[in-house]
Amino acid sequence: MSWHRLKAPSLAEQTHRMNIHKSLEHRLEVAKAKNDQQLIHQLEAEMKYFS
Image 1 (cartoon, rainbow, N blue to C red):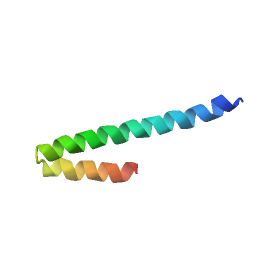
Image 2: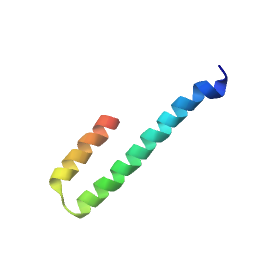
Image 3: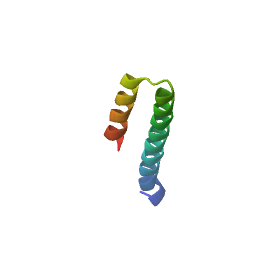
Image 4: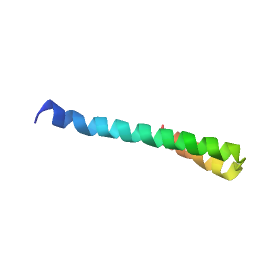
C-alpha cells in the first residue's frame, strides 16, 4: 500500500473530528445566547465525549 492510502483515513478522521468540534462550539454559542441551560449541559457533555 502506498503512503497516501495509509495516511488518508487518519486525515479524514482528523478533519471529521475538527468539523464536529466546530459545529458543537457554534451550537454551544447559540444555546448560551438563548440561555438554554438544558441544551448547554447536553452540548458540554458532547464536547467532553469527543475530546
